[in-house]
Image (cartoon, rainbow, N blue to C red; front, side, top):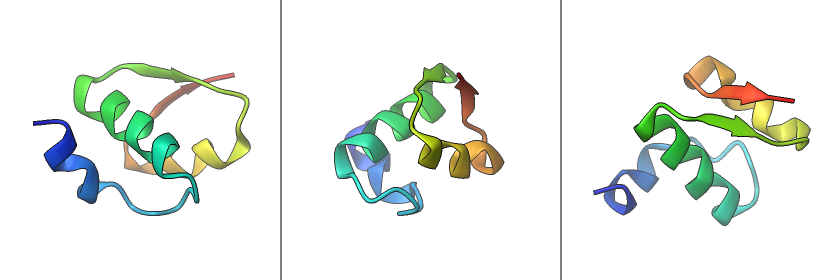
Length: 51
């Protein structure tokens, strides 16, 4: 089910694996811990970012 939702994540981050992690965090309502500044672009999409 999570893999099927991968296409729902906007391609704001260039890394496909990073977008999969973002999608998983969004789907499971997890917090994402990352120093990658590009992850902040997903806060408006509901990503809970720590760091």
